[in-house]
Length: 384
Length: 158
Image 1 (spheres, each protein chain N blue to C red):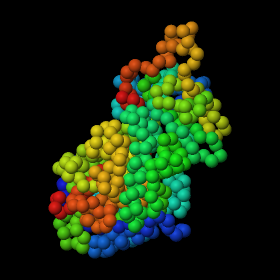
Image 2 (cartoon, each protein chain N blue to C red):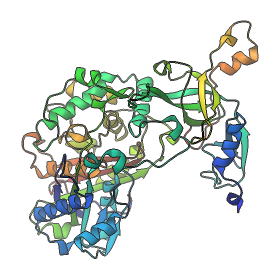
Image 3 (cartoon, chains in turn purple, green):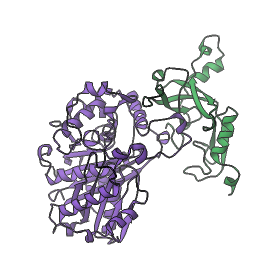
Image 4 (cartoon, rainbow over the protein chains, first blue to last red):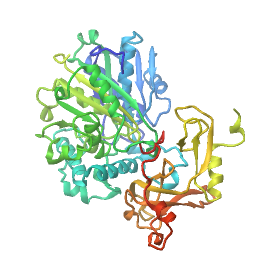
């Protein structure tokens, strides 16, 4: 997003809500409020300090109103942009713009979902579209399956390479106490599990869990006086493409080819400066596409890039150290949790899964059916 | 501009479907095919949209088989690049869904729908005995994938 200044704001508070499966009748707002309080505790700020609200959830259409009512806040600025799972990276960019412009000082970005408890059908009802509905695609999975099939056709990517992404995620998840999945996973198991939409099996697809999270963002100046080491926003990029998979011009090229360069340009860094990637892994094909589109490998090479455990613990590039949407947690619009892991890696608080000397981490969000792409580059004080 | 009081783009498309035809639009300002039908051409903003009927031949751009419905057999979902330069979601029938392949030539057929579902286009494999030496030159030519045609603005191959 041009016009923003590298490092002008920092994430000072970051927290998950309860994850996995929550009690019956829990609302998405309960999860947002819980995560908000935890994120405030994390940085030492109070509810009354929040003067900007940025939130979205498929279960509450007017979520900024509902959250302000719940917490009885009167925010100076609010933004309920909803573009799927990348909404929260977009919120962060907008929060930075608002803070730089003096429209607010302390921004809350939050999300909550009870999709496991109430079912996906209830949490994210599909809008009718005559041009797709009669063919009964199982959305969003079938859209990603179409992209995977095309990638395999054009570049020779294999189902084993897709499975490598799920296996690497599982290996990271076993190092994360908060992860949903607790058992090892093999390539063979991924390939032999129940087919959902060819070529994707259920193990190529993200989890369906409850959960949420919150980030507290403030100016770099104010961040210095707070409890946590500030994690600076070095670069952001936002891009939207199509809304429906039928209208995506090339199923192997996403709008991350636009959001990535925007974020790198603003951050003024090289790819080799990035120690860790948090890439939205709704399906095993997505990290492959984003590694290519963000420039970490050439177009078409993503499948070969992830092979041989290269993005797993001990590999050449640390990707999705939380275990990702595939093995850690996926409460519908997962982008906020994608950022929380990157923030924690830069802080150095990831325990057994900590990437050594992680001064710069990249978080990439995806929304809809490869539709919206938003990239954030976080850095430590040393990287700033 | 009050044409939406008398006819919608989808309504008109369905009228073509009822006649067994796959319709699309062309923006007359720059001669670009437009699909799905609209009242305004994307990018140009032109309202000078001409309806045309496709010859109904296309190529499978990507394909999947959906296996989630417990009460129904797996079914095909495909993206079809129509020769006139636009892309649409559909399915390929009359063939095992797993045998639908990227690059396969297909021909449109209009599914009649039912009380709840208006008619909609589906496709069948276009490779027929017409490819035999006895088939007409014109028919054989139509079954070959098109050369590099004009690109389209939305959802089409570049």
